[in-house]
Image (cartoon, rainbow over all chains, first blue to last red):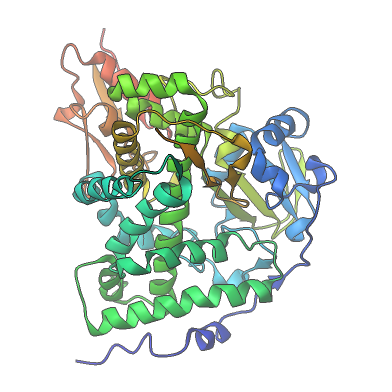
Length: 423
Length: 66
């Protein structure tokens, strides 16, 4: 048997072998006009993107910016859906907007398959993951998630002010992802740093950002090498052993998919749990109704996902083209805002209101088309269990200082500081 | 009444088997499947319509026989 030496080189050397991408000048600072100079990395957007998006949908439904080397922001549901479905003209080769565009040769695989992959490769890479994320398979993690949520609330013991983002919401997906990937649970607090390094640094110059990302890659190589030496029943070993087209996956495919699972599995669900608790703290009538009628939770949860959808994706335009009244250039970014789509009055009645018993809710929080969030069943399980446990243990809570709440900037939006008063 | 899933449009969101588990199931990759040949038992018509109305991909068709 040959030794698996796919992970023996330093990842910096692996990177040197890759085709070079393109860098753009880092532009930061206050936005002059959201229609022509938007930035999702500025504090005004983090504080309330919905006001900005609702305004743009009226006066400039496909906004533009020169920042990040050029990007477009559609805010109508129909435009967002059309781009999500159109993999011929829009590439997923990078799905996080920054001042670095990976080389076109990186398609159709991309850095973090399958989310960064285009057809036809995408289908095969995604197929490897789907069986591990079905609703039935995910239900096996429900009991341990529930126990863990209880233990987090046990730790509130005696406190009357808790940070629901830092002391509750954050730990739930970190613990579940550590469990699924087979990483040491005591490393979970480091995952939040990795998430910040990937998603919170998009305005930095590419070199500075790369330095931050190296920490994550270093960590993952240690974990992967340990799994090569000591295989076990988890997703890391599964990916190390997985085969495509009759051979094991490339080094960059294994590492990239693990990066995807770790980052996409944490920030998103953390944000969804936090935003839901924020809403309930600020809207006592909704909180009381859910405490009195727990059966309403699955419906209410979908409404929180619609109104506070945490995830915005990105695409790259493949070729110069005229698309719905605008002239797009090859390699322009698209900021694909599912949150904006979810608040389009042309698609949803009372789009700006949170209606916790909304029966018909075709929201796009988990995306549309071939890139539908592969972890959506996991996210829904975690969100449901986190809210069930919280509402049963802490039925009364409030927001003593709304101004103390802080929100993440960038493509994943959720509360990062959420001080709640509990009895 | 019958329900059908357009397999070309289903991407495995699973809203149908969340909302109407008696009418829809998941396959081994999470894609939706109409159970029992898609025949909707009497009294379950509302569940069928709820699933149809909540499919983000509009992949579900409800067919009513005259």
